[in-house]
Amino acid sequence: MTMMDAAPAAMQPENNDRAAITGLSAAMAKWNALPAWLRWGLSAAIGVLVLATVQTVTGDTDRLTASSASESMLRWSIPVLLAGLGGLFSERAGVVNIGLEGMMILGTWFGAWGAFNWGPWGGIMAGLIGGALGGLLHAVATVSFGVDHIVSGVAINILAPGIARYLSDQVFTGYTGGSITQSPRVESAGLLTMPFLAGGKIGEWKSPDWLGDIAAWDIFFLSDMAGFTRGLFSALSYFSIIALAMVPLSAWVLWRTRFGLRLRVCGEEPSAGESLGVNIYAYKYAGVIISGALAGLAGAFIVIELTSIYREGQTNGRGFIGLAALIFGNWRPSGILVGALLFAYPEALSLRDLDGTASSALRLVIVIGLMAVLARSVMNARRADAVIAGVLAAGMTLWYVTASTVPDWFPDILPFALVLLVLLFNSQRLRMPKADGLPYRRGS
Image (cartoon, rainbow, N blue to C red):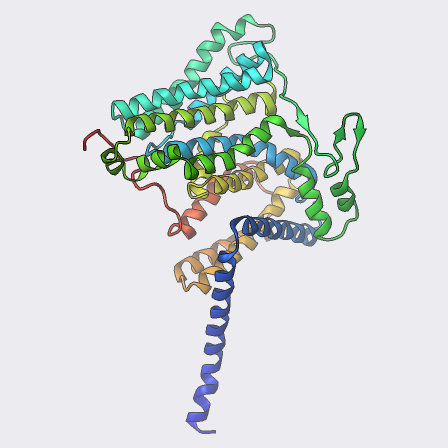
């Protein structure tokens, strides 16, 4: 064989690699061309497939795809979802709202007070108003007086617990079962289990449970998918339905109405909007007050649906996790919903995972996710991302092999770790509003 004959043979592996990368790029292009709802649905199915595979491989747990896991995930995602949507309205108006946590705290107190006096729906309205008052305070400071957005938000986060404690001392201490740190117990707004899909009732008649029956067949993936989906339709609170309806409603308001267009102008080019006659201050006020109202609803949900009581400190940083969901979702309502569900899943597992096996199995799920990031980085010729993803995957694999359990804090840090990973690997795709957080004065 001559050197001329050997050269093509030596180049053959490189050509094969390039062909494989080209094929993967074409597949990604076709994937991105699919409608958004189909991509989200397929992504969810792939996620359940990964969970089912890990569950089968480890053999240590059957909780990853159980109905109880998805039911709990949805319930615990609602406060994060509402807080994230609140941040969306504020930041689309150009105002960074670090004070979501404080506004959520106000929502918990006012929600408990309203629910005790006027029932759960009164508590929902009271929580909304309490959060909106916090949003109004933030708007006055940042829009009218030009206070730095971060400083104002931190001040609200410090002020809100003090206000709640003072109000508890003045009000709840006079109620039976109340004290300076907690309220009396309050009632839920009611639960709904979907007929046929999850075996709910129609009147007094109990319908079949189609998804539950499929889950009982114990067929790989099919039963897992049915069981996981069933949890999303079981014991669904009416408050949760309202919160979920906020996702398409927010998208419609922000991208399909005149109000939404003008609000987004405030976060992109406020000077251009002012030149066209838009009252920038008024729309910034509206965005921040709506933001506070949604955060207040998140706080009211915690009291009315999750704990049935107000307790000091019960928000547990969910306002900040809502901001994390906002970044994860790229300032889009559907992305915020996905982020909220992902962030709530580890917490939902940990609540029922007394022996820690399900939380431990999540490490293997993370390894698979990092390997997928590694493959995508190689395909896109992003060497730095590929190296980082490979190192993280190796480290997580080593941890999984050498340690059979995980610390209690592991589920709590996952939301923030996910956001860091998104910022690390998808920073080029993230796009915050252009004028978000920038000072604006009329006529400038």
